[in-house]
Length: 470
Image 1 (cartoon, one colour):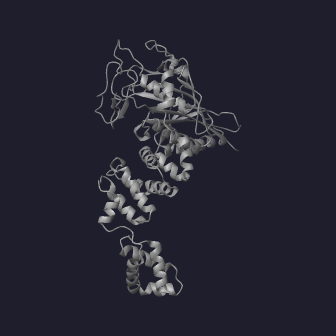
Image 2: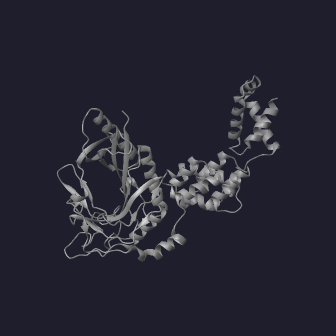
Image 3: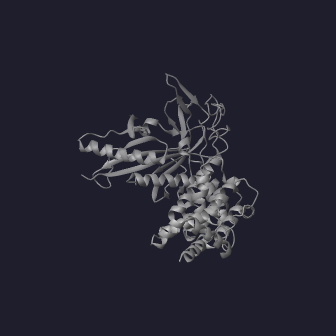
């Protein structure tokens, strides 16, 4: 029997505001001493009043513009009531009936709504019976996005989550680092035998990587199908994901909206979003960056492959550096291609070491290096060696290459001397080449490049070797 999976995603993203959602405490949930950034408001002391963070609202409106969502003319905050140690008020300030955004689309996936709420505290459980709670995260602005149930496989869900992370980082409204909990994905999954009909929904939480999102969804689809094939019932419940065991596990029965007893927060005035019209207009003309979908088109027009584009765009700092490189005037298509290749290979490999940072690589030096390659002043091996020393260096690559005698040698007189030495030192390879073994010539070229420390022009070196042997 064929089953049709249906998946809807709920994604929470911590916003990069200076202060928390409803108080003036610093928005620094990571890297601080526990409970260092708390106050009577975010700790829910009696008599305190929350005040919405305007910067957080503007970030959500910017996101809405990027995904072409409908902005509500009226919005309000609600109280979502439940008890747990990570929410000091015994309710969470969220949005229910009147979110800021409805509709929109990203990566071909339709969105249901986007709203603002406050994050919860972080609980830490020791090996005994005690739990410790750090309230630095309590009250941090949290954007929640809900998709329509229009995803039908794990790979599509993974692509959507990656594109959302890229958009959040492009807009500079969230770092969206999943490993640190700055972006948290939950998947609602059901299977059915009838197209367009939804089965019993199961929510899977604790998905802290794109790999986990895809693996958990794939596992849950298989689990539900197996249950139905065996004549068992699927329970509507919330399940967690065990990365080590690659399986989901039951956490609790699935709550519904009525379980949370939503009602408008009486301490927060209603928000009329037309008051933010001036902000949205400024975004249209000044603040909105080039969005990922448009940037892909621009890079494709530069002749980059899809794989190269995705590697560049996946790293904001790399993307910004490449944008500055191609903003130079009078660049050839070959220059652009070489720049992209070196950034996505050698530079990316160096950046995997914490000692290297693009902040320490001068743009002018990188441009000069690529121009030297394009002009055949240096070969690829020399370029790799120069790149390694360019980070944090004030000396230009051309000056370094000149000082170390690394500029490419192309004149026949100098190369012929090298060729004569190669033939004399490698008679076995010469004999094999004469007997028809073509690979021997590559060996000789390699030895010549080694002898010249990569400075020889490999194409001309090969020609001289061939003509000398014949």
